[in-house]
Image 1 (cartoon, rainbow, N blue to C red):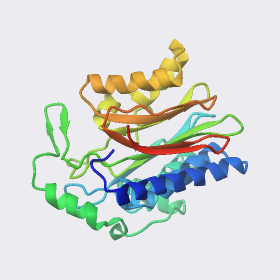
Image 2: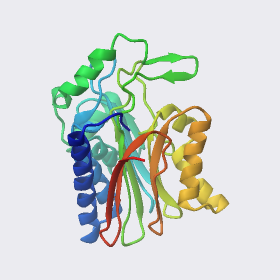
Image 3: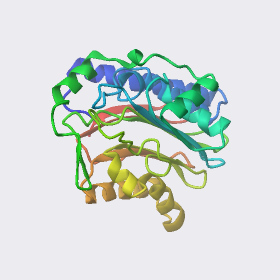
Length: 296
């Protein structure tokens, strides 16, 4: 999600979205699986300073980049996630390592980084994630009371709307996958973790129904398990993916939250509802037809 953009900035975002889509599409069209596709696609976005994930992550209240990510395989419901990490270059790959090389689902902090290193995941110094624009955003807000708790409501800073990245995919074998990665909320305090690394809140995939990745004010997605809820509405109520995804965002809005999600069902139908003024998004189908967009 974003505010005003110059034409040059808009083109940069759309070009990077198109590049990421093409990477994931090439994997699928060459016989690759959905897990490989979503990981590779998210890695492209993590490596770009344009998005609030990986290289483009915002700064927390201590002036550090602190990242979360998750991934889920719809074929077997296996999932992996990491939270509050500072040195894993591609958090989505750390999440995949948790899924495939451990008996756990979620690892956090130093333990997650130690595990990733043992698995051969690329570790970088924290300075790798430094971005001057993100740093200026933090400096402009670090002394505000914006990023703080007020009762049970999370009040984010004016820079909160910086896009979490995610990808969902369906491969030729009929297997779904989803991945989500984020730098969280600018100037976040208290070791805050949002929905992105929480299976069922910010990420979910089940071959019976759909794959979902969410972005927005994570607290609202957590409280209603939105990613799982989309799948449940399809399985138990017979909703289409568009109906279920739209209902999910409606529930977020009813509690006062903002955000959006991307979803794909097991027939390749796509839904991208959001209740914000804009959301970075794109898709590509089996015929190679592609769309990228930002505004409504």
